[in-house]
Amino acid sequence: GGETPIVSGGQAITGWEPDADGRWKASTKVDNFRQLYVDGRRAVRARGGPLDGGQLHGEDGYTTKAAEMADWKNPADVEFCYQVVWAHTRCKVESIRREGDLAVITMLQPHFTHARQKEGVHIELPDYVENAFELLDEPGEWYLDRAADTVYYLPMPGEDMTKAKVVAPAIERLVELRGTLDEPVANVQ
Image (cartoon, rainbow, N blue to C red):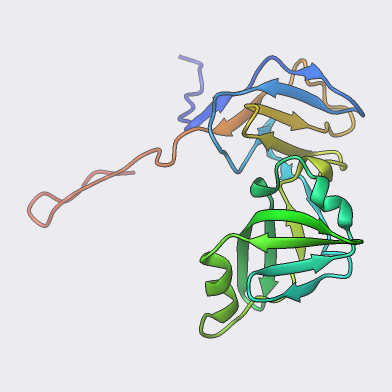
C-alpha cells in the first residue's frame, strides 16, 4: 500500500566517481547499451557534427581533415549517423588510419554498402558522428567504453552524480505476450 510499482528492464549504474574535465565515470557489467537515463531523463550519446572536409573514399569509407580521429581510442565503437529525407541510418566504423594530414575511415561492411546502394534513399556524408570518448564535451552526454566496462557522463548543471539515479537498458524484451488462434491473449488492460 502507498507504493508505486515500477516494471523496468534497466539496471542501475552506481559507484560514480569524478574523472577529468568535469566528467564522471562508473563501472558497469551491462553489455553494449545504446541508451542511458539519468534521473528519468534520456541522456545523449557523445556526439559531434559532420566530418570536417569529409569526402567519400572509394567504395568503403571517407577521408576527413580531422586527422586526430586516427588517434581515437575505440574507433570500432564509433557510428556515423545520416538523416536523409524520412530515414535515419547508422553505420559503424571498422577502422581509422592516418594518411598524411587526413584520416581515412573504413566503414564496417556490408551495412555501409547496403546503405549507399539501397533502392530509394541513399546515404552520402554523415550528418553527425556518435559514440566516441573524444566527443564527450557537452553536459548531458555519455560514452560507454565497452572494452573497459566503464561508462562516462558529463553532468548537466546542478546534477549531483553522488545522488543521481542512472539506469541503462539491460534486457531487449521486457514483456512478451503470445497467443494462438485457439488460445488468444486476453484480458490485457
